[in-house]
Amino acid sequence: MYFAFDEDQEEFRSSLRRLLTERAPMTRVREIVASDGHDADTWRLLASNMGVPGLHVAEKFGGGGFSFLETVIVAQELGRALTPVPMVTTTGAIEAVLRLGSDAQHRELLPKLLDGSVIGALALSGSDDTAVGSVRVRATGDRSAPTLTGRLDYVAFGHVADLLVVPALVPAGDEVALYVLDARASGVSITARTSLDPTRPVATVELADAQARILGADPDAIGRVVNLVRTLLANEALGASEAVLEMAVNYAKQRVQFNRPIGSFQAIKHKCADMAIAIDSAQATVMYASMCANEDNDEFPRVAVMAKAQASECLTLCAAQNIQVHGGIGFTWEAEPHLYFRRAKATEPILGNNAHHTELLAELVGI
Image (cartoon, rainbow, N blue to C red; front, side, top):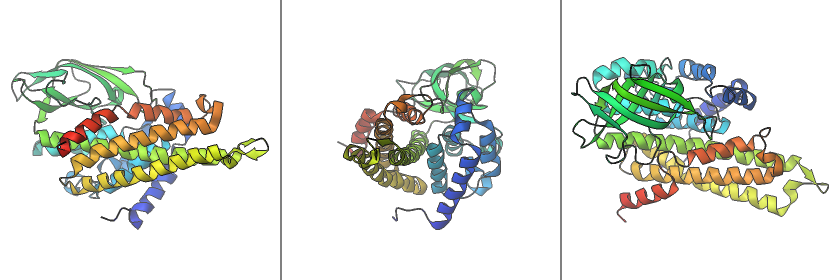
């Protein structure tokens, strides 16, 4: 494997970065997080004009027909800019429909998810959301007309979602399946919650005999969906880490103390060097996971877990060091470092924290 993006992919990255710089700068991000945390205009532009939700989806489904690597570039750039749009959760919903849905569900659900006219929310956040003993939603009724009852916490962008993909125990109670339902259906109650990371708002979803449709219960397919989301989160964290390092270096060049730029002090140099080393290490793992996802090979489950753990750890380190480089102002609302620190701490527990991922990796490799 050659661990680098090709020329066309880098040109795509440059175009996307220019767009986000112009249309969704940090001043706009601050405006959005002060309201509902969803930049609807930018999402509409990204989805309808650039087709980002379906870049890696086959053209026969209405996607762009590109590789998964183009999608991870989007995740990196959105993470770098902290753009508050539902890219990861919608992509997760798309993957669930693709991998578990029927042909009829493909025809019905995918076009609207791919063009952005419908926002999807994959209702997963905890480490064991797809485990039989941990699922908090249960399906009742027969397979043709199931209803769901239960509660889901911390659903990313749940308050703006049109379509929910929910893990639930099948009526027999012996396995977990993914179900799809209309977010505005009878029996569905969605309440926006205060989020540690205002650029990734969350909501509580309560279901009371809500009508749903089953996508499927194949554990391998569900696992692949979860690991694709882990890989996208890892790429988001990597992009945010790179932005944080750049921010710290620029500030260290400009801030003067004792008649010298603070970047000339060895302690600041060490902090920036530690960040750069962590990013270089995480880049290799995240890129390998992304390439394995693109090939959908047997190594993917292991490296996806590694990538999520290492990238989230890298972002936490970089965000904390960046605050130290900025000094007291780094903790204030007026400065930007705290937004990246919030993103870091909120990303850590999604789909399992580092301790959970270490245990999961040990199981996967048979230790």
